[in-house]
Amino acid sequence: MPDILANYLTKAVADAYGEKAISSSDNTYTREVAQSVGYTDKEMDSIPASANMGVGCGSPVAAANLKQGETVVDLGSGGGIDVLIAAAKVGTQGKVIGLDISPEMISLARRNANAQGIKPPHASFVETSLAEPLPIASHAVDCVLSNCVINLVPSTAKEDLLKEVHRILKPGGRFVLDDIITKQRLPDDVKEDLTSYINCISGSIQVDEYKILLQKAGFNDFQFRETKNDLKKICSGVNNACTSSSGPKSIFNVNDWVASYQITASKSVNVEEGVKQNVPDSVLLRWWDAYPKIKSSPAAISPEYVSKLMKESAQDLAVIDVRRYDRVGDHVRGSDNWPAQTFYDDLPKFLEKYRNTRVVAFYCGSSSGRGPRCAGWYQDHLNETAITTSTAYVLQGGVKAWLAKYGNDDALVERD
Ligand SMILES: C[S@@+](CC[C@H](N)C(=O)[O-])C[C@H]1O[C@@H](n2cnc3c(N)ncnc32)[C@H](O)[C@@H]1O
Image (cartoon, rainbow, N blue to C red; front, side, top):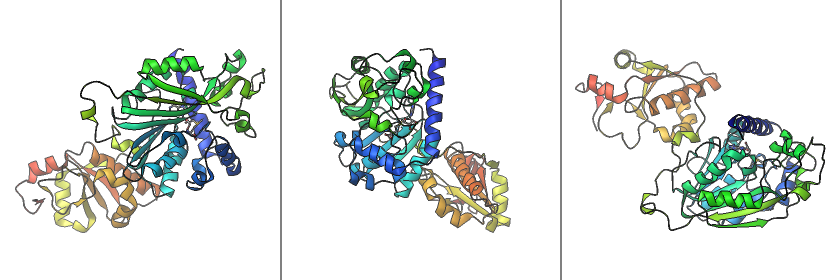
């Protein structure tokens, strides 16, 4: 499939699920769908109703045998249903990361996690396309989950995605997914129907094709089980649910053509030399992916101007050091330490403290990464809450420039 078509389909899918994330849904219906594909009342009661969009075709967490402390990734996490159920199973020492292409789905899932007091790194939601390399470290994950998503990934990208799943799994790690599979070649008018593609039918493949893709990705040990979930039941009542086929002339009984399967695959424990020793500390390649993208771009503020304010108008100024483990040695005198990695979650407290401080200057080592990022989150938060009494700035050159200029001045530098 040419890339242009793959990109078109990916965008159409992202838009459709984004639309779904911001539309109201009938909770009675979505709960019925979830129950019909294997979720229990207890699971449904344990999560916000809006985490369940009624678009799954199975219940992969139930089969994943998750243990306390494990690291889990969910491909195409939607409103967060499987991430939140998995987060309870792996406990606060475990980590679950949901990946989804739709910014609206990511926002919804973050709100749902927030409503339960769950935040990164326990549960994180990252906006990304599954047609791109996964933003996850290699050999870092115990279990990869997915519920009714691989069929939505364009055929040209499916093979690379499964290779990526194999890459991120630890040796002996498992891949547990539910997906729609075609029983026979679909009629052309269904194959070519965009709505049927978005609704998880037209992009599905046959069992044998799936097996070949898993083998090419490096999985030798896998099982396919037809769950016999009634896909007609899933699609009753809504136009935009998975597995409803609207539009094509060959109106068909969906259960005659496609079926839901649960697939489990394990990565061999006998992998390349050295992999076992190299399990990384951090699962996300970029920790800030777990937080919203920054919209504002705070201005730089010079060390000279900050030092002038410190001497002449200190009540108008707050200097914020966002370093964590590298905050050793000297720092800007009077600076307050709010590590970048937890800064976003601490924003309400931060705002309370600094909402009336006219100049809030952020810095890290050289103010090229964490400093501007935290300044951006703060400024976005000010903008969203229409607070104009405070403005975020980035201290030019960070602590390095400060120390190069004022390293010998005890009035401006605090020593550890
Ligand atoms: C059928 S829904 C399933 C959602 C969730 N797994 C559940 O069971 O509720 C498919 C989800 O996959 C996401 N998705 C589809 N194609 C994707 C892609 N190429 N990359 C990342 N996410 C994708 C959609 O945005 C949507 O949230």
